[in-house]
Length: 294
Length: 298
Image 1: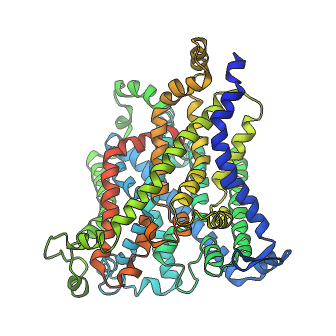
Image 2: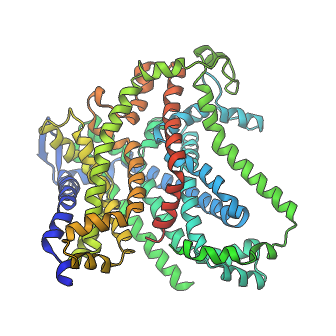
Image 3: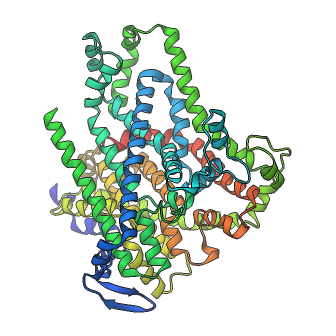
């Protein structure tokens, strides 16, 4: 039987096309991009060899530093918001709404599938001050919290950006974590309740530890997505005011396509890749240590 | 899978959870209703406001407060956005880019997942790991070389750069998910099929593909939303105005239409939102089920 499942011709026919496309369009360009980091210039002006010049420039570039810092700040704020709100939603579905949660789940999930650009333009208008005060501003003023132009400063822009991305994606994490909570056996919850664990204590000592795996995959998923943020920033603030909300992705895009510096653009892209891989590995490390402790 | 297996006993038991609830019923119900009301307000209000605003006239945007209702209910803004705002062209372009990429991703990805999970050969784990790399590496890493190649081969003025790039970028996750789904299908089925004289290729097409039909649907949805909503790749490779996809078009909408045409802008955003809503109402059960069954257990 092994011979049938090991039929080489069939393997080649089935795997070949996908592997070929993946290699030519992703693996080769990845290596090629790494090669660019040693060059200056672009396709039109031609390339000159620059050694480690791009890396040195990156090391001393204040704009790259602020983009890196913004990427981390945004990644941590939005991931924390997404996973926390998702967890609260999942608890709500499982323990409060129970079987009637389907309708609410469907409703809260809807923004997940909306185009980011559409959502960003909508939030621009929600928080706008001209030509008319947006709905969010009107609601805040009704509560006695006056706020000027949100997009005039770095702080206001950042807050709207985080609010928007958490609003957009919490339904997704809600369903993801909900699925994980369903895997906790009823008997475990029941015996914990008989031992006197209810409410917050039940969640803290029973539900939270037992849902650690799904929580971990949510965090990895979330961090990986937020570090690569591009469309929501571009559409909401366009990186501004100034370059206050410019993440590495947008800085790379501008460097390569607006200033035509392929070499430096590739160097920024490589930094982003290293950050993504590094952060994922660090999370896995931490989680393993925690699991052995618990 | 586990869900459906444990469901019947849960229903049959005299529902153990409510018996241990310590809070009185009405406090519980009140908390529940308040939470749900808050969620509905947070989720629905912005979207409702968006659609209502799309009917307003320019003077209503400038003179009236944002919460006021439009005075007339005509589709003037929609007509403007659809024709002079080129939304029709953008939607067509998005369809032309999405449909072929999606078909390629599903066929190539499912076949590869089958070869990597069901078939037995040395090195298959390593190949799967190579695909995994593609999930984590940001797309920025492949943009510049691809831009250069598309430019030099003269593909830049066509839809091909988008189709090729979307297919490649969508493959890693698809291959990985498909391999996971095939894990649940016993290999014996395929061996039995070959005993009846079918080759492995026939076994894949006749048995393997139908066996993961539901998974194909889930993956197709995930990839559809990724491609349809993508901005980075479409912004990079559509140098031509006539080739703009809906996301790029929407992004440039204010620019080309003039900053002050609020009505058509709101209408263009609403077309996106309402389109997504219709699609979502048709398929939402399958999305959430697929996510629940596949994503975590993978």
